[in-house]
Structure formats: structure tokens, C-alpha cells
Length: 137
Image (tube, rainbow, N blue to C red; front, side):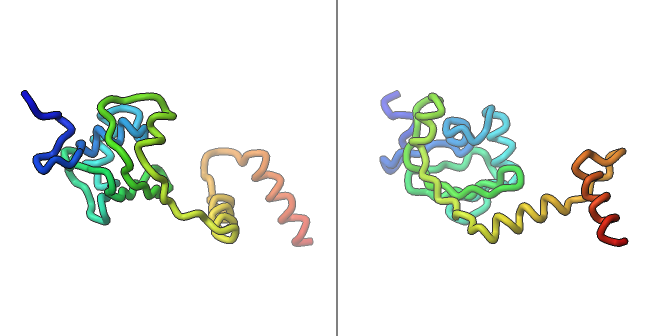
């Protein structure tokens, strides 16, 4: 075989999205990367990906829903194999918008206001309950 597996027919370098996510360390395993791509948590140039075989190339912008966060990255390079974490950071340019202090405060407030219903209250919850009781009287 004369062609490089990372070469697209037009000569542009490309790679499967699941393999790239694994190489760039956005997923711990290749299987996890396939599930991420197949579940629709990945967008390439604003288009939802539903197949892990979809190709990415340098210059593509990926939007990744990871946990409760959204990351926006631009593909900078294609790796022939998975390397170290430092090498993985060279595969993409992070374009995730920086949160303003007000947005960070509102996110923290959302986390703090989350109600837990798992048995007894934790120490922090008990302190808040006592503080509320003191304010009422």
C-alpha cells in the first residue's frame, strides 16, 4: 500500500474523530471516544457528529460536551499515534471562551443552591441550617 492512512484522497491529512479524541486525550479509551462521538456530544464545524468514523482535519473547530462543561478546540495537527499529555496539547488550540467573574459567581451559586437528598445533612449543610435559624429569630 503506497498511501499514508492519515491522508485523505485530496492529499489533506485527516483522521477519524474517535481516534483523534483519544490521541488528544479528551477520552481515556478509544471506546469512550467512540461513545462520545456516537452520542452526539461532539460537533465538527457546528455540525453534530453521530458517527465515530467522521474525519477531522487541521483547521476544523470541535465543540465537545464533556461532563457539565463545553470545550471549543481547533484541530491543529493529526498524530500518527497516542503520545504523552504534553504531545497531546500540541494537537489542538483551546478556544473555549473565558468566563467572566460574574459568570463564575453565578455558576458557583448554582452549585451551592443544589439540594442534596441523600440521608443526613453534611457539616456545611448543618452550618447553613443553623445560620438560617439564627436569622429568623
